[in-house]
Amino acid sequence: MAITSTHRSTTEEDITAEVLRRFESTPDARLREIMLALVRHLHRFVKEVNLTEREWFDAVQFLTETGRMCDDKRQEFILLSDTLGVSMVVDLINHRKPEGATESTVFGPFHREGAPEMAAGGNIAPRDSGGTPMLVSGRVRDLGGRPIAGAKLDVWQADSSGLYDSQYVDGGELHMRGVFHTDDEGRYLVRTVRPVYYAIPHDGPVGRMLRATGRHPWRPAHVHFVVSADGCEPVTTHIFDDSDPYLESDTVFAVKDSLICHFVRHEETDDRARALAIDPPFYSVEFDFVLKPRS
Ligand code: BEZ
Ligand code: FE
Picture 1 (tube, rainbow, N blue to C red):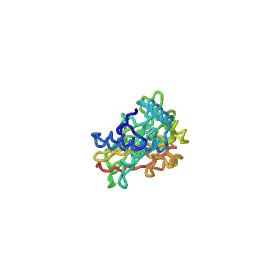
Picture 2 (tube, rainbow, N blue to C red):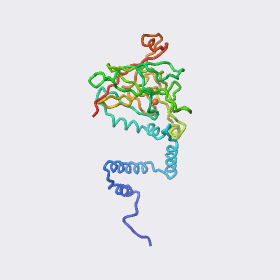
Picture 3 (cartoon, rainbow, N blue to C red):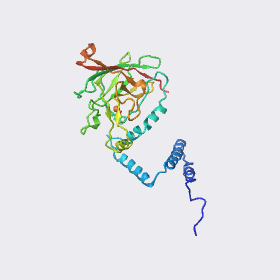
Picture 4 (tube, rainbow, N blue to C red):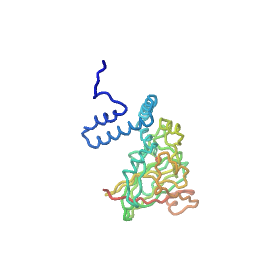
């Protein structure tokens, strides 16, 4: 005879309540909040799509492969978060900025520690002979418009082939990266090459997901910055090229209007280009970073 119990058997209707009950006594209040919401949403999701056992197993396989793809040079979970738009939701809710402050965007998986310190005009692309030279300049200011001296700019970008240094087989050596500081008037000047649009790594599970859903892997051309200064909140951001065909469909949803800039083409030299021994044609772009005070 079957043992009847009101405690152990769960039904489609009451299993969620029972799982939630087990997490109710999580000592850490924030962890409790997160686990309860996670269970509620996951159960609702599984029921909404009527997930089959096959699909559940495929999802487990997908996540397993995503983990296996990760090492010190490749972060497939960040790519997954980025392409699902989760990274940008986290960015948007955590960096609500006052009017005028530079907006943030995704950090991405390609930042590296240890970029060389460079003087104003330093070239972050010394080995990129195929790229068109570009000067990025402007000021770092506070919300009141006052220039910030000694602000730090950590800059990185893909080369003119659309690849980051770490994506090359022998990618141990740092390239396309530099750390700059503003002068007494808050000015900075970075020499690089014009960035190009590039595909995020798509030879793994994230690429498969993009193909299966009819999406492309492209990111519009951009230069990455983390700008920081004493007493201010650092900003992690990019500047984007206003002529890029992928501005409307960045595969990681990271474009914000305020970060789109005009990259000016110069066919003739000028004093600044001469001083840096840059032959035309070259590009220049101006962008002022505005930092808000640390809260
Ligand atoms: C990047 O801009 O470096 C990047 C951001 C998200 C995913 C892949 C690359
Ligand atoms: Fe990038």
